[in-house]
Image 1 (cartoon, rainbow, N blue to C red):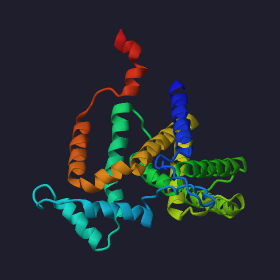
Image 2 (tube, rainbow, N blue to C red):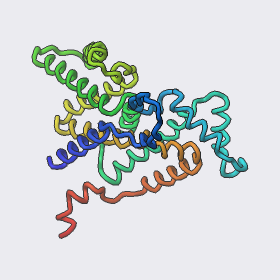
Image 3 (tube, rainbow, N blue to C red):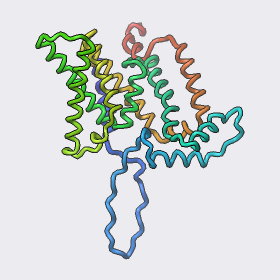
Image 4 (cartoon, rainbow, N blue to C red):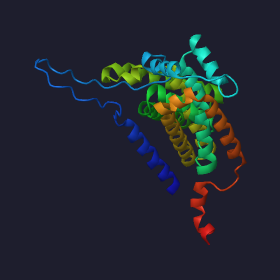
Length: 294
């Protein structure tokens, strides 16, 4: 129970941090005084960068980095750099290349959290897909939609159980998806009313990923217990939020694009060494600290 409350606290702290409108790049020098009496324009909020979209704000800086980079001979240190340069010149978006190179980074972070810290979650692919979902729609909107989907899923299952309606697994999941689709559609209809552009721009891919997470939650809840389902879901969200931070850091984007050989080689060695580790995890050390100390 103590572990569960610690995980909940970490999740709420991360959500609060990510929800705060901090703009570290908004520091501009104050303009010099002029004699004209023109009113100064009000500063508009900077849009949230989205590496999953092919916008000028995303592609421009990445392509400029590639143009400014000086390349040496192809072999033995720069083959991937030349391949990236050729792909971008042929029309492949630079943000797609960065996102593909960052997926092994996200997978390594999730694997390290599992084998070193002890955070389990629902596998490795679902937290990674959820992190990309948070990049696309934002962590606050993503977690809000997930809570709505899980609530609907639990209400539908509870209603079917109370009404003593027995259905096979696939028809029951199709009925559940029907309710989820109608509910999310209702939220999208309400988005213009509450003037929320993040909800208005939600695509089908993030909704499908959130539905997969809700399905895993329901499956674990039925097979084991609600406590284990909540714990695994919370840890999955924590892993996705940490991966989301890596996917949105500009220095990480630049290093990934300019040094792909170093990145991929380091990740290969790191995961190989991580796979050889068979010791106690940090949470296990904390859990059995009295036995270890004695």
